[in-house]
Image (cartoon, rainbow, N blue to C red; front, side):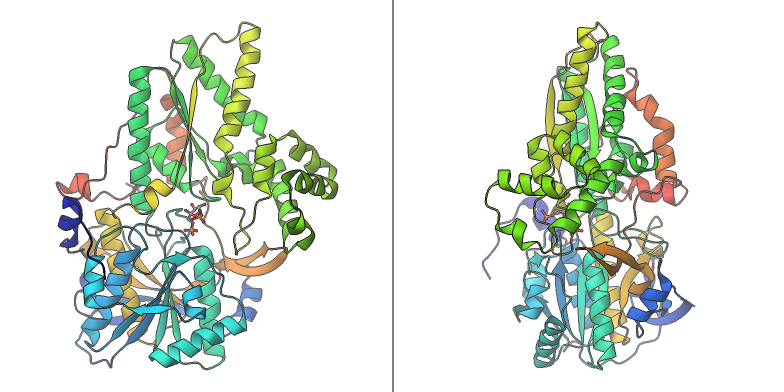
Length: 551
Ligand code: FBP
């Protein structure tokens, strides 16, 4: 292993001892709760997962010392990076070693493909110690291969047999945990002795239900973006010359944008779920932004920040229809794939769309229309992070302001800067919250494995309490599933948790946003994540989590 050169903060963080729930400090007993149902489409999901459907919720309590044989585990990091992934692996390692020092941990390389292609490395204490409390997924790499064929499952079983691996832990988002669920069911159905455990990862915050309070990484990523937004707001207030249009990652869900808005108080934050509920058109959204800008100009202010969720475009009803048509049209479409130039592709798409969608497609700048037809990921998702919605909005707002200026209804200056924040936060050094949460998830996974569970997601709850009071356990993955259309076919997948317009975080935002747009209002400057210092500065969870829990 090549020696790493480290910053003073890296060195200090290496010796940070994550806090864990009381029950995880010693040995546990598992209490079984109620039997569970899937999020929707219960009959279909039950049929597809006869061996793993309806299992009970599990919660851990402090128990007596027990003896376990050696536990060999294979771990996979799947999908986009999220701060804390390394600590999940450290938690699994420490967990299985505590239960039996002869246990071994193998990391499959570069995502699920490592399992299929038998690419792995043993994670020794020396390697693990280099990655404690660090950001990134570079310990073993990540990838987005979808595990779905019997051949892949069998190849996975082969390597597990060779390495005597009793369980696979898949650390991933909704799509990767869908893989985990399918794999668990397959191995159980075919009597392979291999357990599969999932772990809720994603900065997007869209993998949650009443039992999974938040996915890991959301806390750190939002804090990084909020710091940057705050810095930009201070720059804007100082120079007084720019409107900053900031698009934020998050896929379809607007949780990141909402959380960043709660932390920084921009003049505008768009929430996709509200746009859909109110059936707003692109022109409606532009008009709302323009009204705020005109009002600020009337008060002599020509600067501010506008937050835009990256998935916005999918939630504008007419755009949603267009994207759905494109998804079906482009799924496994060799004719389209064979076309060489963007012009040929554009003509092909235009010839296949329904008249309404064609009109929308034509109205879009060519660059955006092209971005909508780029490759879907292996799970069938549009690559929303490649669609430059912020530029589209700047363009439309500028045109509308020019019209108003021409008739004397706007007398300001509209100079803009566009940003896209996503990759800046996905590998940040995990906040104390994420460092503690992920390490606890790792230990939880090791216990679920030792106790012979499969088809469960490691879960740690009560996250607004001090870490010692957190409640660890397991949630059947089938509980999060429903049927959705992917690549033109209905498939069982984990239901994405979108922003709940009746939930407290959104209600708080809706109540205060007008005040934030007001020329008299102040921005908030959250500042950088603090790792050492007073607890009210270092250990605060997100505003979303606090509001959801009634704080
Ligand atoms: P997952 O956690 O669901 O894998 O996605 C995280 C994410 O950062 C999204 O917010 C973003 O749209 C996407 O990954 C970008 O994908 P990529 O890493 O392939 O560019």
